[in-house]
Length: 202
Ligand code: HEM
Image (tube, rainbow, N blue to C red; front, side, top):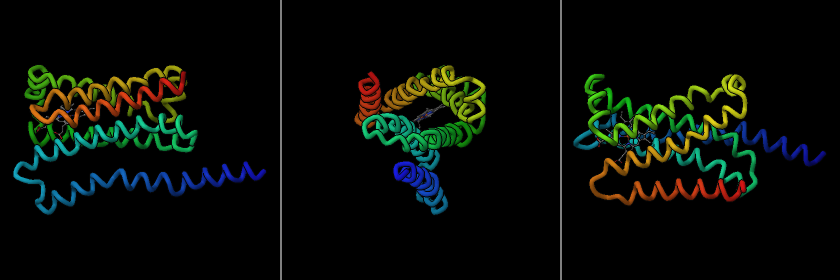
């Protein structure tokens, strides 16, 4: 009986405190960008700074969302799984802002130019590959879609988050001309998360 009470209290803690706190923390980078934009603190090239800033946070949130299962497997704290969908949707939110700032502010919604960029610049092609996957995952993230697809098909589809994250890291690696340390660090973190998942599930 005491065990049931403890797990119910914990559920309440996750629902009432942990999720709202994670939501506010995940919005903080957006709020910080808004503050700097309003105060003219985005530097000499605010459009490039905006695209890069949201690109960085998109990749960070992809890795944070991907870290949920390894953390659950290592700590046996199952409650953390309740944050996974929200964190994944925040990754999508920042990817959407990243792409919107590029397509809207940089290319002025010139879709013909966008197609040319996708064909001409390999790192944009790779970014688009990741984007298409993330759109499909966000669109099927609701409970109704999970039921419609069925657990197995849904899980198979959502395992595509790994190719999307690999493409995200690669996209970053391909666009930098110097300073490969950051994309390589993201790549190593991604590899470590995947390895923990594989080892712990084996
Ligand atoms: C999962 C999808 C994506 C992720 C995670 C991602 C992430 C990133 C990251 C981390 C950077 C480097 C930021 C920095 O230098 O600090 C970047 C740069 C860039 N990304 Fe993406 N990206 C994605 C998709 C896309 C797509 C679909 C496009 C275009 C349609 C795009 C366009 C760009 C551009 C143009 C830059 C260079 C910005 C500049 O130097 O002005 N990205 N992206």
